[in-house]
Length: 356
Image (cartoon, rainbow, N blue to C red; front, side, top):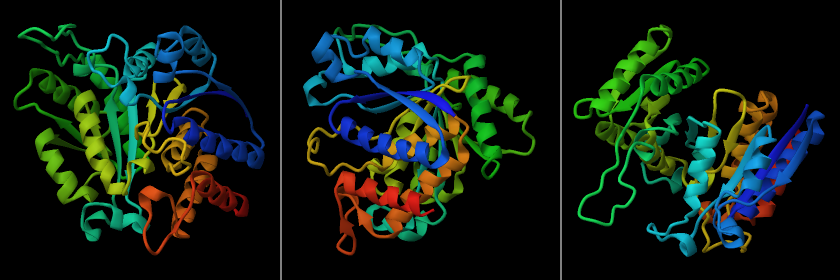
């Protein structure tokens, strides 16, 4: 296939991990006979420094011509003042809104080889494979608010419509049909009116999926279950803020933030793909960043935007094989393993892809 991918390396370790993911996509291109065109653009703190805008018009225009976008990471201490008029995360929110990227997919898988790096007992990690489906363009992050919270009052409003909940719920139920046919919908319906609307709407959607089991879980209970029995979950559906918090909590089950990918999708095939880790400026330029989250994000890109499931599986299998061989980056290093650089880890992944 012929397709265009825009890369937004961003800040910190973003450029390093994006470079490794592009190497993997180039390998897929050669092995499977595809043609990927790559274009790089600025976003985040680096764009603020260069032109005063975290998402320049030129970058947005480039993304509009792309079939998919691969994003590294944005932000860092240099731009961390929450009262600053211009901040890197503003670019991220604008990108999501512009392309109506309403569904955020965050898979969390516990690898047996990395169980020692997770904070839970090994037996609790057995069989953990959760897909978080987070509503991404509504809720409290986008509802009516007091723009200036520097007085003695401030407010942010959790606002949802039936349509907004319906469409993300359908993404979750469709995903469950390809997995274990179970959806846990997270809300706070015992307190919040917006969450009662959420629950009613999810139940209405569930009627169209009689083969999928629906469970309602209050958000505070869900935080407990993720730590006590994470394997009980298959697909977890949540609103913007709850999904943000819960998926970050669950990320530790994989052993490192560097392990986890994500996809932000709209109603079509376009998506923005990025690891969930931050820009980690303290290790930027040292060649020790974990590229797995970005490489697995590239695998999600192949699957969700290009419908190349076999290619995505090849990448994912190569990552697992590399971990099984004992290769480790610094964040997941162990006395029994072999600590390698960012580029060397990708070399191992590529060798497994070539071998198979």
